[in-house]
Amino acid sequence: MSLHLSVYGVEKSYGGDPVLKGCSLSLDRSGIYVLTGANGSGKSTLLRVCALLEEPDRGTVEYSSGGIALAKNISLRRRVTLVLPRAGVFSTTVFNNAAYGLKIRKMERRKIDEKVNDALDFVGLKHKAKQDARTLSSGETQRLGLARALVTEPEMLFLDEPTSSVDPESTTVLEGSILSLGKESGKTIVVTTHDKEQAQRLADFLLIMERGRVRRL
Ligand SMILES: Nc1ncnc2c1ncn2[C@@H]1O[C@H](COP(=O)(O)OP(=O)(O)OP(=O)(O)O)[C@@H](O)[C@H]1O
Ligand SMILES: [Mg+2]
Image (cartoon, rainbow, N blue to C red; front, side, top):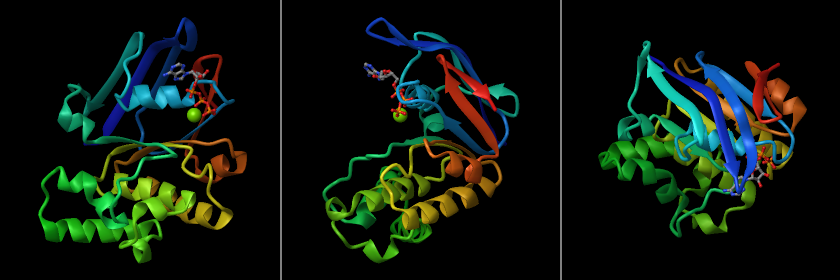
């Protein structure tokens, strides 16, 4: 049963400055939602709230499946992942970085190898598996961030500016990965971007953040 998210009337202020002002959003269909909006309009804030990493001051964030609301516990959190553009890397190989989420889930070694190799292949980093992750270029680091999220097979995936410092070639690789993920049944992806053409290429649903609220385009 696929995961739905309903955000209703969310307000969030920092130091008295309101960012989200009664923001509502319904992610009730799988596919790719692209969220655009000006710098500082609150896109990243909304993604953190949606990914259960930050509590809103007011309003509700409710995940459900088959019409049944889900408790915000560890098993729900494992189905939801936020990937940040400058994801920190651990000082070990690319492979070990990508394997992290599976190791903490205590998955068996052979399965980890298989899933990590698939994910690295998917983002075009398989040939870098043995390299120290700290020596990757910034575009490669962004792709590693995506691979690290993918191995755990999240159903709701939030990608905050996944191609912000990525060259055109790698952007094409990443967009291809995002598009094919978006076609997998039951997967919902929310991507933020400032690139209008990218938004058109990726979006099943286009959203814009304006005056503290999300509007469907
Ligand atoms: N933890 C925080 N403490 C203080 N202010 C914050 C915090 N997080 C966000 N803000 C402020 O909230 C506003 C919205 O920030 P946010 O990062 O959500 O915008 P954004 O739409 O993602 O912008 P960009 O397009 O530049 O990434 C900004 O003015 C930012 O400075
Ligand atoms: Mg942002």
